[in-house]
Length: 115
Length: 115
DNA sequence: AATATTCATCGTATATTTACGATATAAGAT
DNA sequence: ATCTTATATCGTAAATATACGATGAATATT
Image (cartoon, rainbow over all chains, first blue to last red; front, side, top):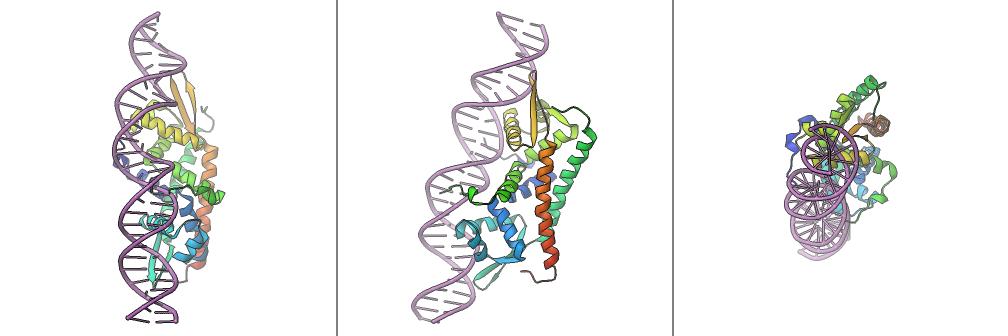
C-alpha cells in the first residue's frame, strides 16, 4: 500500500501537480510574496516575518529551490534568495492553459444540464 | 512537534495554498481534466481511465468535493460529477492576481541585480 | 585566536496523505 | 425475494510532510 503511482500519470499532469504542491503550504506562498515584494531577501528577513523557526523556514526554502521557483546565493554568512521569474512564468502558463481549456469547455457546455 | 501553524498565516495565503493542495496530485489534475472534457462524468468512467483503484479514486473525488472544485449528485446506483465552474473561476482569479502581482514586481525590478 | 552570526542539515516526533482491500449501502435487474 | 452493480466508507499500512531543537560549517567581528 501507499505505492507511488505518480509515474503512471502523464508528464503535463505531474508538472502541474508538482508546481501546485510547491505552493500548497501558506508558508511557501508567504515566502514567495515576501521575496517578490523586495525583489530579493536574505534568509534572516524571511525568518523574521514568518511564524516559524529558522530551521523550518530553511526547509521550506529548500523545497522552493527544488521546485525551481527561487534561486539562492551565499554572500558571506548570509543567504540571498530571489524569484526565478522564468520558471515562475512557465508555471503561470501551465496554469493558464489548464484554466483556459477548462473555461472553453465551460462555455461550450454552458447550456447543458449539469448535475 | 509538527504542530499546525497554518492559522498564523493570512487568509489569502491559506486559500491559495488550499487550492494548490487540491490540485497537488496528478490524479486530481487528471480527474478535473477528465470531467471537463465531457462536462460531466459518472464515477465509473473516471475509475476506468485512472491507474488507481475505485476506493482511491473515490477518496480523491472526495477531496475535490471538499475543496469545492466539483459537485456530485447520485443518480440511481451511479454518482455523477461535474466541475463547479464558479469556484474554479474564483481560484483562477486568486492565482492570476498572485502571478500578476509577481509579474509587476518583476518588471519593476528588471534592471536591478539579482542573486 | 576566540567569539559571534548566519544559515543549512541532521535527528526526531507527529500529522497528513496516499493507496488498497474489505465491507456497507442503496438502487436496479432477474 | 435474490442477486448484481455502483459507489462510499472503514480499517490499515506505508510514505511524505511539517515542525523543532541541536549541531555543524563558514564567514565576520573582536
